Length: 394
Ligand SMILES: Cc1ncc(C[n+]2csc(CCOP(=O)(O)OP(=O)(O)O)c2C)c(N)n1
Ligand code: SF4
Image 1: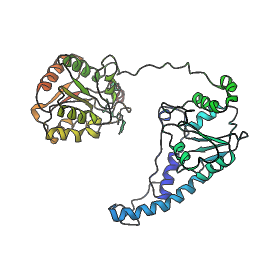
Image 2: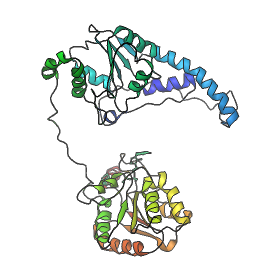
Image 3: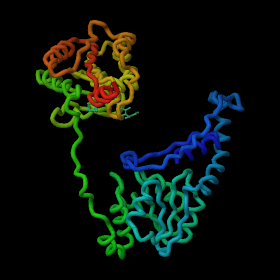
Image 4: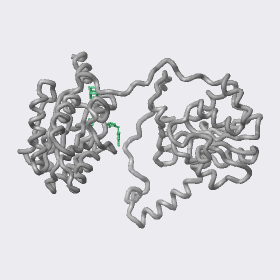
């Protein structure tokens, strides 16, 4: 579908988004790779030279074009190989199902889905196909992962000859993920005769894997940073640690329980600054090297400009650990970036985050927390996963 998305994008000269839900992102499977590579477009310029100048007068015109084009997008959805109307014997219920929920529905009915079904994987919604379902069936159930977007839209536009069931009416769970069991259970609430099938057809909970809480690897430098930080913060009455997104977020969990906030990429520094503005002390931000160059630098400039009394720890493992060990944009440049943003060189400290340095780290943390202004501490040690990979390569 990703490949098809590129083709669609070229055909309509419009961005196409591929929407992944949690379970799909966390799944792995053998895939067939299409080896025939598409030829990359040669450098070319828009036919309309004003296309990329979205000043008000032009953007108003572009919006009119977009509305016109929308009719073509809808027509493409009706003909899409990924959207289907599938007939079914039992017309007391029709099903509108999207994305991964389609797989759940198939799993829930291994013998075949008895209800007419519209399967949607391409947007905008194929309203003609859905209209047919509403015309043919007494009621309709919408099964979709995440927010009930389709359900809301259909309730507004097409709730005409029967009832619409789904997340908003309570048959399906509005929070958490869907599963084949929950899909079947949701349908059973409307079609009580399916209850007997429920027991026999459904697979039990997987016994193959047991859930276990995630943890920082043994030997990870983030561990030593938290060990030192916790050791120092014990000395203060009301310390707050503002966390960020990456492996080091696991410092929130046991045994460290070291983080008070995790909101989004870069929010550690901005939240620490906001808290310090309101009188919080100590206000410590902890951020990874990749997250720092992704969206921590702007917040740090703000803190520099006001010499905010916060302590920023950049836990540098020389990689983007959480997403699999990609190169990090700031490797080898973090101190220069901080100096370039205006951090006072006297309060820009660097330390190797090794177990043998924990006492030294504590000393530096203590000194900088007690300094009434902005300080940045770069604690550095390569992620052991990438270090192993690098060692094998050599
Ligand atoms: C806006 C956004 N883009 C991308 C991601 C995916 N992501 C999760 S953690 C992370 C970076 C982690 O790297 P780093 O800050 O160096 O910490 P590490 O995992 O190496 O400890 C990224 C890019 C995200 N969560 N949010
Ligand atoms: S992958 Fe690397 S950064 Fe992440 S927990 Fe393991 S050692 Fe630490």
